[in-house]
Amino acid sequence: EAGVVQSPRYKIIEKKQPVAFWCNPISGHNTLYWYRQNLGQGPELLIRYENEEAVDDSQLPKDRFSAERLKGVDSTLKIQPAELGDSAVYLCASSLGGAANYGYTFGSGTRLTVV
Amino acid sequence: AQSVTQLGSHVSVSEGALVLLRCNYSSSVPPYLFWYVQYPNQGLQLLLKYTSAATLVKGINGFEAEFKKSETSFHLTKPSAHMSDAAEYFCAVTLNQAGTALIFGKGTTLSVSS
Image (tube, rainbow over all chains, first blue to last red; front, side, top):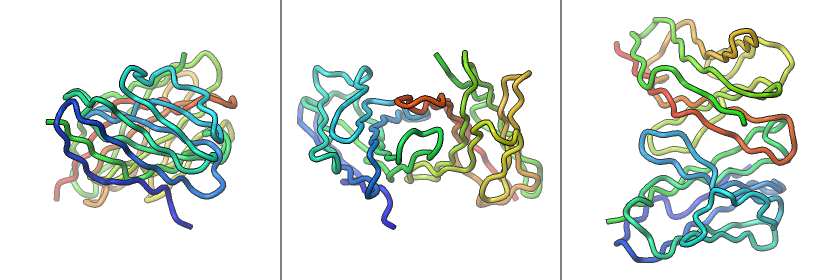
């Protein structure tokens, strides 16, 4: 079984430019999460999807961040325009139902560097 | 709201020594607790989880953790460290409720010397 696939693995952009990250969750996992992990910190939730519906986006900076999950499968996270402080690792995870019973499976992440 | 605190951002042990990584949680209701490991440039891998069954939980790679309600702790241990255990370790908490996400601690870096 393929795991959670994220691309690209690394991205370097200049500030004020747009950037997008892509995530393909494990087949059949209805719940998808985007986390941001700053250097030396634990992951922090940005948004959670149940199928195609964003059910928790309270931590997503909506002025510059957007996300979508078409047909309840793949998801894209976008930043426009990027700022220096957005440099971080963006992690995607998926689960079959709630984390308590099934845990999460994480992708390898996208490391974003804004210069 | 629930949270976890990992005591010690960096722990160093010798190969063969006991590994002890500390995690304390805060939750108004019985929590579910997890330990994840992250190797350089990789995603997070589940080591073990506590979901209100046995209080002593065994995980992969010889790690185990004990849930102690009276101490609000969920410390991770391994009797004998290997060089390959060097990594970042994260404690996380959630509730047994639909629609709650994992909340992570800040992590503990484990270094193992020969």
